[in-house]
Image (tube, rainbow, N blue to C red; front, top):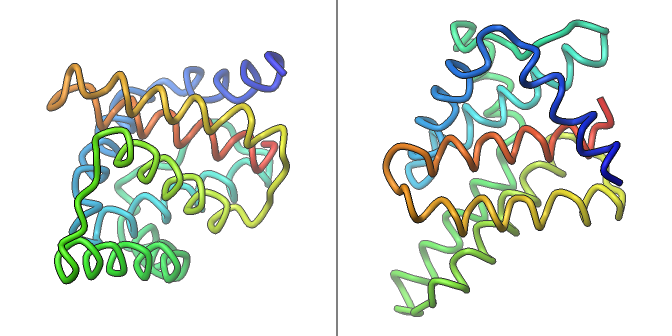
Length: 166
């Protein structure tokens, strides 16, 4: 299991521009509540999977924003429905949620999102990536503005690598 995790981490950090790409992804993570963030993240993840499937190293560049947006929009139907359903429940029915419930909900949402983009699922990848994502979201609250979105976006990329087995 640890070999799977190290295999998922190594292509990320072997990219010379990994920090800049994670930084921009973290910015888009902050825009998820507005819908545009999940579209851009899904486009990036989709481009990542496509690059790796054809044997290209590294992560895609964000400067290809038009193709990232178009592909992300195609891959974001389910996540956008989930976001707007949550808005309807929270705002319309005024459902309150604890911090722990919020962390679980965000972890589930991002996992469902990754599976919908990659279109692959296996239990080992879930057992490795869900706790990683949960911890990233939980720890991230300590450095809310700077590190939290970067850490979570990094965990989502690792999760994508695990599910896609790239």
